[in-house]
Length: 168
Image 1 (cartoon, rainbow, N blue to C red):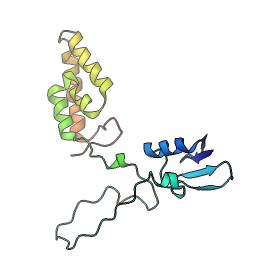
Image 2 (image 1 turned 45 degrees about the vertical axis):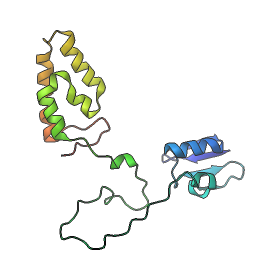
Image 3 (image 1 turned 90 degrees about the horizontal axis):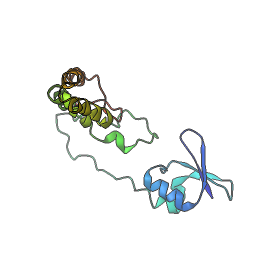
Image 4 (image 1 turned 30 degrees about the horizontal axis):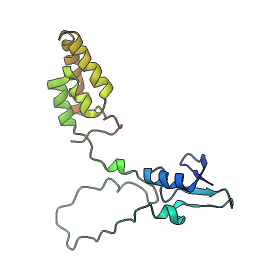
């Protein structure tokens, strides 16, 4: 039986090895996660267990470019992360465009399309229902609502449903 020590310093378990392997596949256990073996009372990293280490993919090795161009590339999203910190791959996903969200809000705000685009399906559904169930009379209210939010999107004042700022 094993337990893991979470990032919040709480112990989760005891669980069987199969459960740890499943958690590793789901990303809930990473190579640097502390594992407690209840049989021996020993603590170690998840990457030290053969069964779990097989689940973790090896870090890809990337050769530096042969010659550097004069133009500097954009900074990496990981350049500000201190070494030894585990970063979720969700942080590397491209952000949603604030221009697209703003234009959708301005032109289709009465239908809540910009909210669907940003991932706020509940609010988008509410705006759509207000427009449809009032036979279009509520469209004036939701159009103003959408216009204001479209302008906020263009100015960078809104985030997507994941809490990330909107990209350009």
